[in-house]
Length: 207
Image (tube, rainbow, N blue to C red; front, side, top):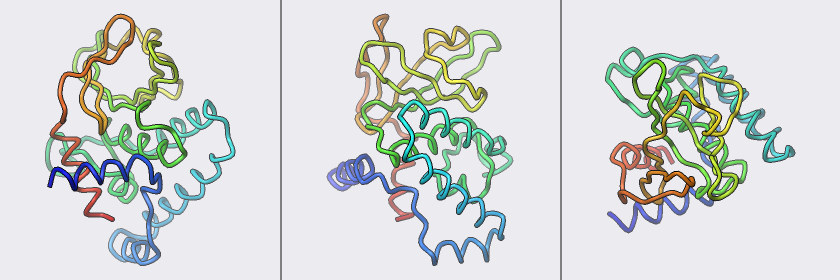
């Protein structure tokens, strides 16, 4: 099982096709969730394809802006359970998501556009001004420099140093779980993150 999961993580990181919807899937989605859900998926596919000709910086801006237009909703309302991590396919079908769902779909969309997985991290943060935890996507454009932050609560992309409202906690991707030091170097703290592993298993079942 561990070998299979490792192989799957590698394929996710480098195939860069996910999320992909077959024609049969689209017809099933139309039948079960309606024409609006199907059209939302077709719009996503067309829009992301149009981003491929852009520079990396413009791709970041456009992905953040476009996906932030999906509507926010708490997990307890959509999925009838707390802290549910929706796959990008689930998010596009429902059209609603919580903060981690925005992070996940942005992560896989950027992989689809050719960004390197070792530069992208799902990041838990603490809101220093309002309290509570939140999740954002971090993009390490340059090593040992503050990462750029893609946040569903902001259409503007700033680096972590500029986001004085946020205190970063954990950085997660397929390579493991990390903390960050004062020089913005990633320090490994664990090999696995349970919710992330569950997410990958759900994605594997979708393909």
